Amino acid sequence: MQPRPKWKELARALRIRVGDDCLHPEVQAYLQRASCERVLVACSGGADSVFLLGILWANAELLGVELVVAHYNHRWRGSESDEDARFVEVMAKTLGCTYLTETRPEKEAAFTETTARALRLDFLRRAATEANCDCIALGHQQGDILETQLQRIARGSGSEGLAAPRPIHRFERYPPHVRPLLNMRSGDVRMAVAACGLPWCEDSSNDDLSIPRNALRRKWIPGLVDAVGRDVSTAAARTRQLLEEDADALEQFMRASFSREVLAADRLSRTRLRASPRALSRRALSAWLGNHGLMDSLSAAALDNLLDTVYSAQSESRQSAGEQFIRIRETELSLECDLQKQTSPGLEIASLEAGESLILPTGGILETEFVDVDASLQADLKSGAIDPAEEAYLALEDGVMLQVRGWQPGDRFCPIGAPGMKKLKDWFIDRRIPQQERKCLPVVTSESGEILWVPGFAPANSHKIRAGTKLALRLTYEFRNSL
Image 1 (cartoon, rainbow, N blue to C red):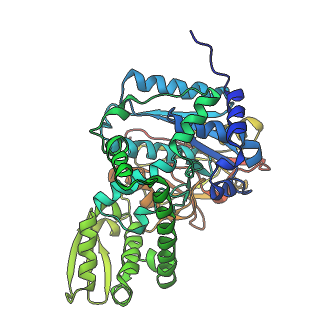
Image 2 (image 1 turned 180 degrees about the vertical axis):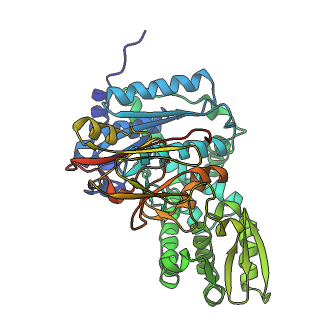
Image 3 (image 1 turned 45 degrees about the horizontal axis):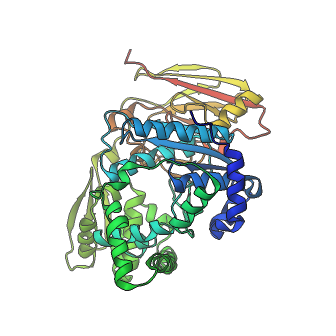
């Protein structure tokens, strides 16, 4: 049996070899901000992610961050995938990092690159939110830029899509994604980890040329390099940067014409869309649909058709979008859906004083009590050990009165770890919570109507337990079959 790697020594050696300037400058500045305290590092066990975890750990004190390591086992390669998970766990724990992992359930089919990536990303975002991480660090390097661009060109993409992967990608619904290694060449990454003696896991599926990204990396990109006789990866990185500048400028112009409130409303002015350049109207329409959770329901062709209709002479039209319809009238666009006009029939409004319990008509039991916030509880909250589906802690004063009701259209919520407020309906869509289950979930609010907690989500950020908090309201929820 080979001795376990001395990960701390190896990580320090890596820092000495590559220096402090290997990190993308935008990402380094972001990580050094006072508001960035906790970083979720996605680690597959491959060379790129081992380099990422090693260099971030070696620079953690300089950056002023605490690292949480996350690994998703998609079980794509059987026992080989399990070995990768054990490898990452040992590395993370040897470095003294909190380690979070999840294994693909049997019912989830992950045997396509797209599905596997979606499952992994969903896990990383949930883990980051539940572990109170301020961002997710990913191991993309310069070579990934050209591969991404070629795949997106093949599908058809605009400046926003071709500006990916960005060094820092901000989302309204999720913690930001940061890519510290985006300026580094793939060969330089592998050379550094090999020279410093850091082991990594080789993914045997990378040899499968039926996977588009592998075929691009192994066959088509080398052919392109031979054909043009130049460093295409560096050129692609510059192209990405230029497109990011263009995309950001278009976004800024669009936001100047269409405010956040306008794009969050249930109706959107067709007149204003028609008066704007098509590039801005496309962005505004996409943002409006995204705010209502409908972008995933529309293909690129469907969005093109919708935009064509907006600019056409047609005065009335209706287009399907998932469970809703987009009604296009002469001067405006609106959403039509019976579900939007329904409140949850399973739960009526009930009052609950802190310290009391409530048996819900759906069969659930909601209990409350005040508890002292000690070091043990603080540690559990910080590490993400609290299951938000069953338990929440809120910084509230004794004697507070709560209300419990069902979900209502228009509800907005900002749980801990979220970058801002968004519709509860969008949270449900993101978590793939079925319609019937949404009707059974209790929504706990203050007397003023502010949403404090919904089981399955972290509690409200406005009542987060902080370092100086002494007293907390503990909420527990248990769902049972209807009584």
